[in-house]
Length: 366
Image 1 (cartoon, rainbow, N blue to C red):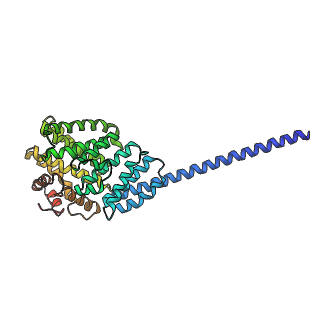
Image 2 (tube, helix red, strand yellow):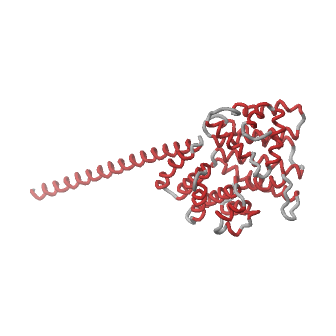
Image 3 (cartoon, helix red, strand yellow):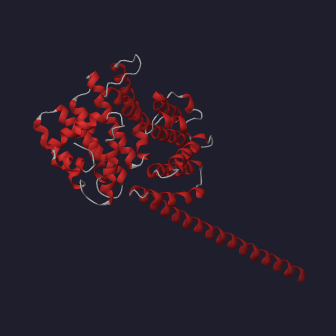
């Protein structure tokens, strides 16, 4: 009898111990899950704050906000994106050693073989943009390591973009090749060896076709400014190539420019300054296209397209100051096509008082 009671007692004790252990484990897991969820929420809030600082043009604030987040990256893709975002803000701030540090971060992402192809390709695309803003001396100073040192300066921009597209085919890189490399060559009558304008135009349209196909699945992954730049590049590339091949109607080309305004409408107000700039560049290019291809009967449309420039011509709001600074770079005489853009601006200023006021406040002579 005593043995039976002792056995029951032991069983009861063991059951209680197990139950307590199970409850303990459950509570521990619940605590950890709650803590993890709280941390994720906090990190998401910090990330959103950092993105808002970047969008508003506060690059120092954005750098300071993004940098601590890198150590919390849960995978290589997130780590790569954060490093590239910091690099972008360093490049935009451009103070002291910012340019050097920015290039180094992009290269770090590209050279990390454990990074996903998408991030490595994106780093290359960004590096192409950085080198395109400098001269040959700049390229030889900052791009003197493989694979860059093997690319002739004259075609380095194209070669870097093509390498990015090999690693991870994507619509943005292909729109860049079509609209930011080949189209300016056509528009400014710059020859490429023995390649004819017709061959260049066909190459542009091949890249547009590939990019359009890829955009169906990848465009939603781009931030608004990049998405809008893609539409901008597509429209300018279509227009440039068709002037040679004459195989795209005026209506289709106009619709390509209209698309920038349609997709950009949600960003013409707010604090996403980079997106605002792209919408306004689209408006300028659309108005230039209208002026060159249609009669004066379309002048009212041009006035409507350019009207938003009047609101930021002399405004002291931070967004307006930022936009004017970016357009000063856009019209910089060191950029390919500067003379053509300046001529378009001069002529548009004769049509639109709003644009004339804006252009005059870029501290450029009409």
